[in-house]
Image 1 (cartoon, rainbow, N blue to C red):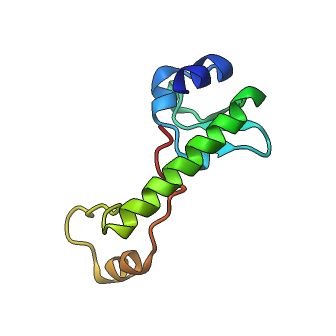
Image 2: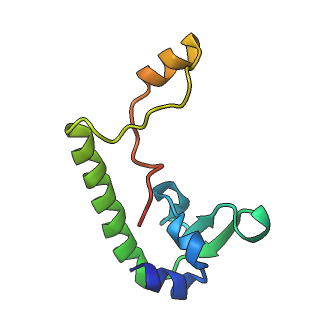
Image 3: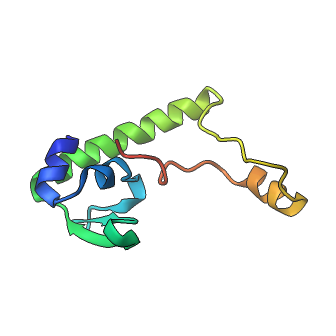
Length: 103
């Protein structure tokens, strides 16, 4: 799957490894590449042939994230000792799967 994304959209290897779920725009048929060459963001075309496979991959990752959350996993520890206001806000925030890795 990731090899087809590399070839079909012109992504570099590390760009493909860093793809997150929120970087895929299926409606426009685009992939947002963050911090590409020269630390610049860019948009690349998403081949039509890959859209269905990417949608399956995204759904699978979302299900895996939901399963991890049901087991009490899927959260990360924040470094240091956050201030009270930040700590309260972070504790109230619910985990989201949109920021998770695609591959």
